Length: 471
Image 1 (cartoon, rainbow, N blue to C red):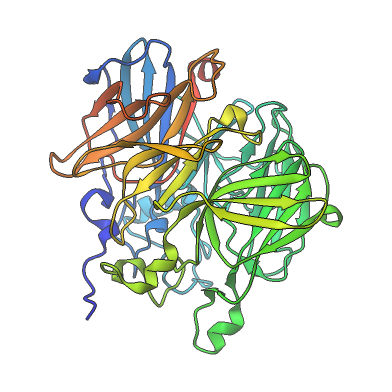
Image 2: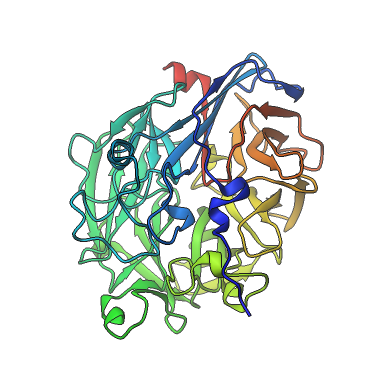
């Protein structure tokens, strides 16, 4: 018998912190590399008030946790992202919006949804943006982490803005998309110039609205993931969830020339699956290769079975376990090959982003810990050429998150740099930033920066070099 307990995403190290602080000259175990100079910032959900109704981990107000590292010293800051919704609720002294597990609020006088800006971050064209895929980005000032305000590219932004835009380090262009459920176009695709000008937004035809969390780019192509986690209002009329993973529908991968339009896209089919995050994509001869964390399905938006009601090895969760996979799409023959790269569950894939869209040898993921709650007990480095891997383990009772790659300045080797992530020790009840040498994963961290405040588990981070901040 399943017992409904307190929401785990409001307890322990998922629970929010309410105090915004600034702390300098933090204690360091080990030694911070002299050439590691810049700022690591991670985004995540941090509700400022008790939720209305059932709480989903995706619902919390965005809070940034940042470490500014320079000359072997570190300063920590955490700041709420001052969205319109955050300010309205702050003034009201209570939650105004309910979340993903509750029915929509079409009669809410402040709007149906709140942009929580809580998911990810991107640095592009001299701006640092906090992202949430249901609305516009918010510009953030570095190193203060103060919110400048919502950013709409001089009013040219006409779609939602994905949490996972892709920046081509060679051309400087940034690609992003926005998806919607209500009416076509269900997908819109945009390109931003290296100077930060939104050049174009084009509709892409999809048969039905889907949750499209991520996508990928190569040197010449953009890859869209039309996966069968669909939104169909007619299901509600039958007493079924509007959001549902359709296990009898194929996955579709759309490959579009970067500067093409809907008439140029080619769709490839594969067995049904869901992908939250891609690691990278690149071209080899006639093939486009995609590497991503694949699940057999997803119950993430199934309001009839919210995550906090899962326990242990509930079979409903088995479809939600992600494993690193590789797909090969042959543009000449139309053939699709799909293969698993590991039988160890992991998520939050990252690469050295200076090589995003190019053939990369190495990829990094966060190793999933046992249990139904998303915790990560180490970082995995994959050698995609040899098929081997190495794991950096955080240690007993210690859990971290996404490993963000910070390249060594002027490095020539792909893995010459560091992986940065927050780690929380559930025994000692403290948090730290861990710095791991990406070329020596099994060694002890080169540095551990002790944080004077608990850092809750969160989503995605970014590294911004000191030269970028100064510019």
